[in-house]
Image 1 (cartoon, rainbow, N blue to C red):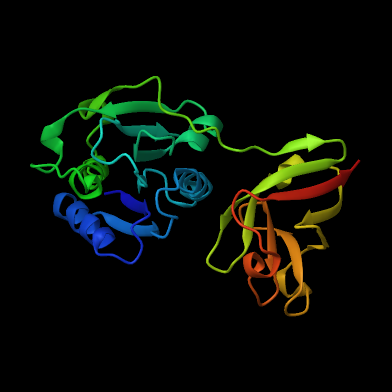
Image 2: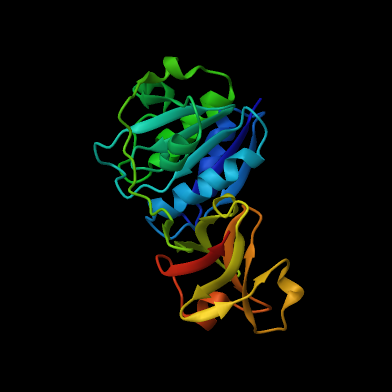
Length: 257
């Protein structure tokens, strides 16, 4: 029996627990893991970013149910995807963008078998009535072609990408984590064999550190985080508050060969 992860913007509400109850009612042997329930409300870009950077940490065969769904109750499709050795259930609103861009051979299906979801689907809680049941049936081994038809045109986000200007990489803050760290979209692999000359955020030149404790409390710096993404932090503090940065703001990385 597979592991099922849940990623939502439901926050401190009963809704994630209700989804777990539905999954376990259909697939009682499944293991259910709360990936994150505090995605900024309706922010599909952040959800796509977290989903892509997290899913590979789970065992092969895991089912990832992500419900950040401003279009709940509308005609937007429900998608299932098989990417590598992982399965996904998401609304068709761009949540799969990074997975589709970066994982080879992804197969996508549009849900269409209503006998596999709860009766009397609510227009306000597809997480309970559609996404959780589909995740559970996939965890039980039901093949995707039994649950829907191939989909070749999933919605794709125009997700921001770093760009190079001379000897600088210009990236954006993609997510402010619970510690106030500013996670950018600049990947360590983009630097290659070049030497990092400096990091500039909100007009301040920051040192590139090897660990958080390298700086004195209250000092800002940058680090390659566990996702191998450039992250701006404040030692024993909150970078978003000290530097006044938020999602979408620019961070510069100077590189030299």
